[in-house]
Amino acid sequence: MPWLPNLGHKFVIKSRHMYQLDKYDHMILDIVQSHKNEFNANIRLAVLERNFWKRIEADTDLNVGQARIGERITNLYLDGLVQNRNGYTLTKSGRQQLAHAPWVNSSQVA
Image (tube, rainbow, N blue to C red; front, side, top):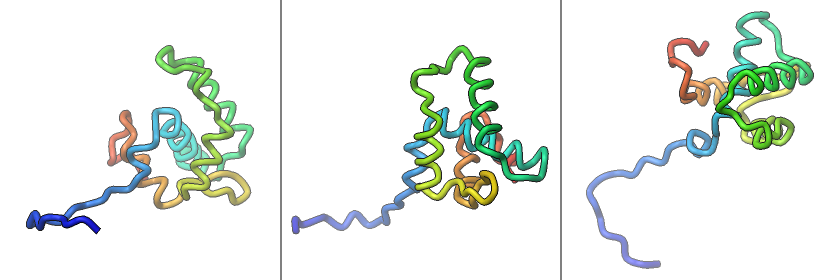
């Protein structure tokens, strides 16, 4: 093992999710949380997909070719940010991650 100098301070490793999620992943988290806030219920996959594609179509900055919603939902599930219990809902980690979305004010996240 190579010698490492003592720099006199601790290194802080942040969650890998904060740096790997992009605008599409944050959009999915936002759709799930918005549905939970509005209807007090978990969101079904068909509704999640419909709302996702509506947002993509409405936003000219987003590229439909990069969306790949199925793969994204699977990755969010595997990373522990969403769970599926008779519909999708955010985990505690998912709600914390949503606070890092570029358009979300952290006081809005429940």
